[in-house]
Image (tube, rainbow, N blue to C red; front, side, top):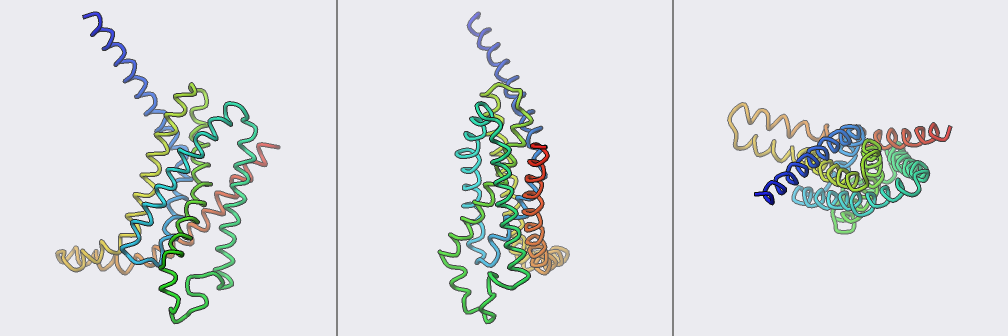
Length: 253
């Protein structure tokens, strides 16, 4: 009976610890929600132009790369830096901000000049097979994961700042929870966005009268939404990158 009582006490302590970690993860994730929105807006542009059957596999590959960025690379790095060299975190974030600004500026340049677009040099669509081929897919996935690395670093550093006073192990567990939840949220929403036209097509073909109307509206509206998200994603890169740089300059007075 004494042993069972000890087990019950340990279980209560463990449950309280898990509750504290859940609360801390929720608070830390909420603080990073602005960057999460930016990440969600940026990603759909990387799957534009691919065949419908390749969209979800590509998003899955990007999501796995994003999770690897957060847990394998960023989490150990920021935990060690926060413990032994906290002064280095801000300059590293600023370097990432410069990269995001470069990516955003490059997209603006391509849009203004017409260079680098999917069919800039091939109005008749002759290069479409190449653009949907293996090499193009690899380039898009790699580009998305590189961009995600900077946004993920910002998310994780913001989350870390919210739990900076907690013990080392608790901080690490909270950041793992944040990484899992935010990755699932971002790429779940992205998957829904890019498949919305297929959902609309299904509704337009097999639904009731109202459902067919909604389906046709989705099919008609999704290209406009995707174009808008491309613009929002580019603006997000510039916004987040600029914010990181300006916040860093303020940090160094």
